[in-house]
Amino acid sequence: MENLLDKETVKRVKQELEKFNKSYKVQILDQSARTALDASKALSCKVGAIVKSLLIKTDDTFVLCLISGDKRCSLNKLKKITGKKDVCMANAESVKTLTGFTIGGVSPIGLNNKIEIMIDNQLSRFKDIYAAAGHPNAIFKSLAWVNTCTFTLLL
Image 1 (cartoon, rainbow, N blue to C red):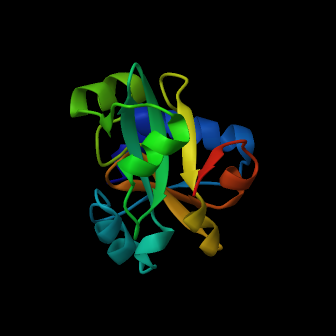
Image 2 (tube, one colour):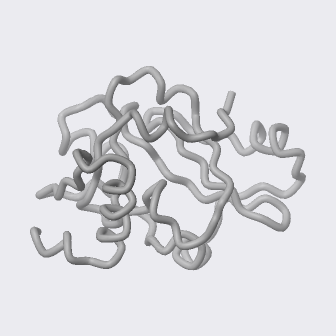
Image 3 (tube, helix red, strand yellow):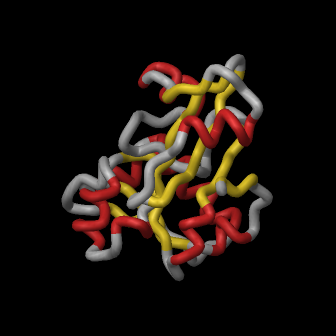
C-alpha cells in the first residue's frame, strides 16, 4: 500500500497539506475507507468524525458538501440554502472531471477546479476529523483546515 503515496491524486492532497502545515500527513490504511463506516472501522473512531465529500449539482453549477459521516445531506435544505430549484447528486463522471478524484477518495483539498464548498457544522463536534486523501485507502486527520477556511456552514 505504500506505493499509494506515489499516486498523482494522493500527491496533490499531500502537497496542499504541506502548504498549510508540514506536520499534517497522508495516512495509508490497510483496508478501504471508501465509505464513512469503513473509514471509522479502519481508524477506530466515531463514524461522525469521518468527512463525506459529496458533489452536488445545483441548476447550472456544482457544490462540494462536506458532511459528517453519521449524517445525510438534505437536498431539500440545500435547495433552500442555495435558492436553486434543481438539486441532485452529481454522477461519477462529473465527480471525476470536476474534483479530479473518484468516488470513495474525494478529498476536500487539492481539487482540480474551484468549487463552492459547504461544511456541515456537525463536524465541529469532534476534535479530530478524517477526510479522504485522493484514494479510498488514503486519509488525513485534522480539524484546523476546517477552522482556517471561509466556508458556508450547513444548518
